Every structure is written in C-alpha cells, then in structure tokens.
Length: 394
Ligand SMILES: *Cc1c(COP(=O)(O)O)cnc(C)c1O
Image 1 (cartoon, protein in one colour):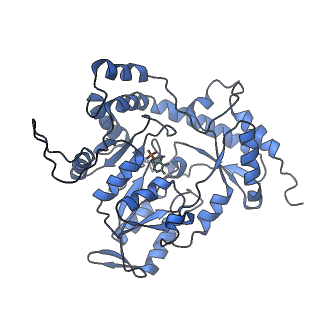
Image 2 (cartoon, rainbow, N blue to C red):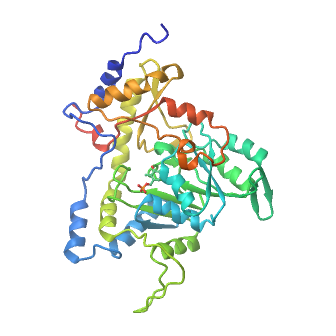
Image 3 (cartoon, rainbow, N blue to C red):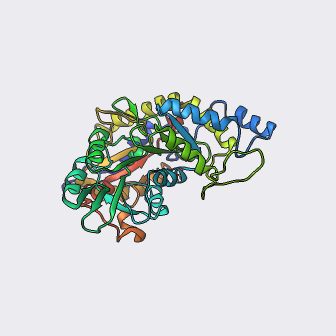
C-alpha cells in the first residue's frame, strides 16, 4: 500500500535517459585517456626512463602541489601506501587509536593497522556522507581525556593519536568544525582525499587541511596513473621525510648505498607519473564533464518518488566522483531489487562498502554509536559516473 508507486523499471528508465544511448554496458567509473598520455608514455619508453626516477615524477609532484595548493606532494605507488606513510609520519605507533569513519573503503582502515594502530570507528552525517564532527565532539567529551602528552581513551587507556576523515565519493566532510575538534582534543588531522581530487571545501582544496593528506590514482579514480597515490603536506620537513622513507630511506651519494632507517619502496615509477601528468592536464575538463552528468541525474531524479541524487553542500564543491542515489527510508527495502535489475540491464551499480566495524578483523575495535552510517549504508547506491558518459549524448 505504502509504496505502490515503486517500479524498478522506472529507475532503469531514468538512469538510461541520463546515459549515452549507444552504450550497451555502462561501467561505474572508467578511465578516460584523451590527452597527451601516448606521447608522454612513449617518451618514457623511447628514452628508457620508465622506472624509479625521471622527470615526470618531479613534474607530477609539482603539478599536484600547485593544483591542490599544498607546499609538497610526494608521488607513491598507490593510495594505500600513501595512507600508511602519512599515518606513520604523523606519529601513529603501536596501540595508538585513530578515529576513522566506519563508512569508508578498506584501505583507510588497513593503513591504521599497518602502523600497529587501532581503528576507532566514528559515525557519519547525512549532509556530507562523511565523519560527523559535532557527534565526534560530544563523544570525545565523554570518553576522552586530554593530558599534556596527548589525548587518551578513558575506557581503553590507549592514546588517541589522530583523526582520519574521508571525503566520501568526492563530497568534502565539514572540515572547519572537524579542525576545531582536533585542536580541542590534541589530535592530528590526516585526510583521506583518495576520492576527492578536484573537490573543494570553502574554496580550499580537500587534502589541504590536514597535517598530511593522501590521494589515489587507481584506475577508477577521477584521474589515473594505472596505480598510484600521493602524500600532500604543507610542512616542508614532513614532505622531505615522506619522500625519504618512500624511497628506501637512502642518503644521496655517488655510489654508497647507505640507508638511515627502515624505509619503503613506495615510489611511483616514471611511466606511471607520465600518465599522471597527461591526466592532470585534463582534470578541469573531467570535472566539468562530471558535473554535467551529476546535474543531469539530479534533474532527472528530482521527479522520482522515494529517492534522490546526493548533492554537494553549500560549503563545498564536489568532484562528483561517484554519483550517489539515496533511497528514502521507506524505500530502502528496494535497494537490492534496484541493484539486481540495473546490473542485469547492463547499468553497473553497487552498494556502499560494508561498514568497517562489521568486518571480522575489526569487530572488536572501539566505536561510537554508528546509527547514521548504518542507515546510509542501507539506502545508498552508486551509479555510473565516468567522464565520458556526459559526452556524445543522443
Ligand atoms: C581508492 C581509495 C584509497 C586508495 O586506494 P588504492 O587502490 O590503494 O590507490 C583509499 N581510500 C579510499 C577511500 C579510496 O576510495
């Protein structure tokens, strides 16, 4: 009786009307190579500079820093490695707790455990799909104690070292109040900006707010290097340290191999950086195309019952990396029906990640009330968002 108007075919119809008609199978997020990719990659091969050093690595790092407005960007093999090193450099050590949203991709949480740290799961807010700074504040007032040497969890006795928010599907978290909470409780802010290259909070790029931040250039991200990532920071010293420990911690010398600590071989190969340089040149165009598609979805779904396309807040500019179809609460029982029918129809859709605190490795980790994240998880569907989908329509 309540939802007699629900008809899965109307959802498929609405999606199709926003997508290029000639396409039989529509992926969630495909890379787009429309610039100097061939030229730059060919140059790497022709000159032999394909591996651990080369001009494209330097160029890519410089262009990334310029675009995001940070002092230093360090290119690495992937976003997970970037997170590992950012947390390590921020001082996360064994048995430190790190506050992280339960609604995130596994990489964010894994990186905490690589440092010996313990994820401490936080809830999201529906406005941003990201970590809720107000709820976190109230929660920390209850469970945390700030001492001269940092913030401590009164329940576990462990130090809480950092907060690691993630800009979900490209939508910036509410950074101003979050920065305040971090200052109040002496917590380091590290942003997982893997999904938010091209997203701005109050005019300043995401990833330019934390002590350190990270990007990913995996094949499904806004720009890709095949695989790749970067660490961003405004602290020159931390930037140097990031470069040093991601390149085996070797001291420069004409022939001696002297390493002054245990480092990592996390550097991005030149051939991948070449792809990155070509992709970065097209970023403004990619963002414009992605916005066209998002606006088309928003418009089309505005007349649908029981669901809407998630929109950026008035304090942010989103890259609309992955568009979100959000069902109203009394439509959430149709989530799987929609997933099933759209995928059968050749339109790839997928649900949100299973929340981190539900995964067997993390069930014993501390967490606050996670009701909002649970509710979002049950109602969220990602829909096709590739750059090329906005083009050649009809
Ligand atoms: C993509 C992604 C990463 C990094 O993934 P890699 O595949 O290692 O580059 C990290 N966090 C989030 C939220 C991501 O979506």
